[in-house]
Length: 329
Image 1: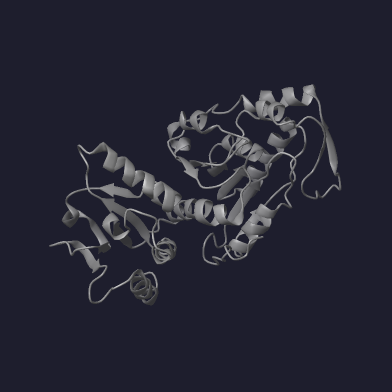
Image 2: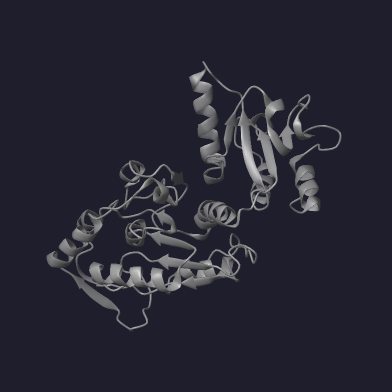
């Protein structure tokens, strides 16, 4: 694994159960499972080897859900298709192959196949024929069955913007509001996990625990209009580990291009952490929070103003050092 990206979070998901549902031709011994156990050392990661036949796989997953009562379920690709159907749990579907039979046909996933990772039963190869593809089609077409508004709020969909295998964003978004593009390919790697999946896990864990983190607002004028400095990105990554971070931009009621430029910049350089965490307002003094990082001090602000470029905080490194001393307070 790319250990320069991976970091442990001993307190996140402490004492909780996380169930991982692997993709087609993989197993519960995949690199993603090792990554989960590394990042969350005090969580229990349940990662079964799925049976080849989809009805058997669903039966196993439903049994494990009742037996283990996982706090979060994460499924990738085929596993995302299964995960979407596991009603009543907090779930993250990563590049879900909601139309897996079509995916199998389009990408040559028929005939003799080899498992990408070792399995507990020692089986290394399997065969996919038309009958098996039909079984997958039958199970995948049960997507969205029994879905209600309460359950829909418990599901996130993450879709790689460089995924050349599966593209079910629009189909998923028809039923779930929480559909997000991330920077990555079909297979999750360390970088896309740490910068895309981890923030969503933190949001879910905060909600489950009723945890209210201190709020940090970041004025978009402090980020610049071009590629941000590494110190900006480093500070943002550090802040989102301990705080609720929101990005603040002017309310652009007439300049549509400026609005689109702001959202495009955030999607490019901040990505998933900015989803649902962007505020457009011309009345910053009404923002109720703990800290407001900005270019010019807001009069009568309801948050501690931190002016970038002033005498106290000349650079982003100064701001990072300040918050590191605060330690999440």
